[in-house]
Length: 410
Image 1 (tube, rainbow, N blue to C red):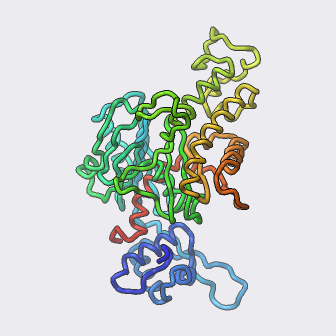
Image 2 (cartoon, rainbow, N blue to C red):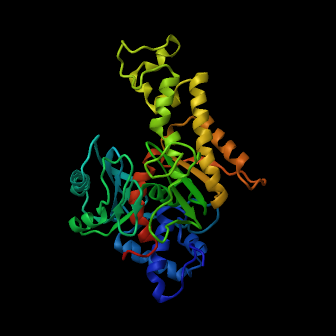
Image 3 (cartoon, rainbow, N blue to C red):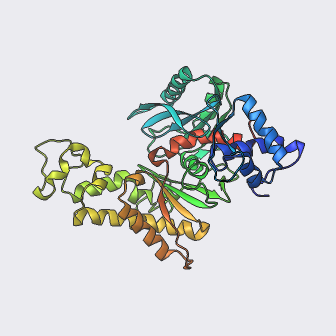
């Protein structure tokens, strides 16, 4: 049965309610008639459920849709301002973030704590702190969604052994949060969560199969298959960053050799760009730093020495060569994944959002030229709709998705 097909039976009421709320929240359907057509539910079933939603303060009627035909215009439906909110919590290598969202994923408030060192106890304190700040602003909360760097055990809610995470391992984050908060709490990998946000509300909204690629100081991925986030039976998400692109390459912390992360994560590429520009490892504005005249302007202002800064600047032959090498490396791992999964789209997130559109198109070209299936269809490569906030919004989506599936009592 299609995900968009309702069930006309009493026992399926909760499923139908979740489905209709999803279609309204994602603005896939705006009227009762559209909901009936999209789901196959009877008009009476749709009308009854919408009436309940309105009484509960979940859905509101808005302005009439203007039509040219005679008769009464249909009433538009939207998520009510009285509907409960959701909280999303993102655990990353250099920050803890939390966001307060509507069921339509409108951001209402956000809190964050940044750090350059961390202990497990500090991790809990920071998570509690950002959540508590949001709870001071809003009491009507449906649940809390958590997105964390991996590898993770999704089913147990444990952050396993992320590289470059201050030696912190086997963190039972879901257990700790459930002890402190009375809300339903749902946990997933950060890139799975980002893929979910793009699937429900973003660029993958009408796409059944796509691969999400996130590049930062690590490289991760999320897979959407058949319209659903792919979860293995072990609860461990896919790790495209640990696909080997050189079996004789350097040893990775994961134990493999030549992993993509060792060649194309943002920190590695930034070092190459600074070297190519004749800069020191860090351009901090020190006038004593030896800088070639041809690249002196790259150090002004200092923030232009960031990866995003390099992406915005006119490229020299040297820096353009670094970007080309990065794209070649990324495409090598992507082609392997594409030949296994055959997705409809590749969605880029994290620091890929900073890429010049030329580099996005170049990656698209490389992947399409090398994938095993050469037909008339182009495999598009696109930036995430939610940009660098895809993982954070995705955390909140972990709650909304459970509601849309009828797993939360409304």
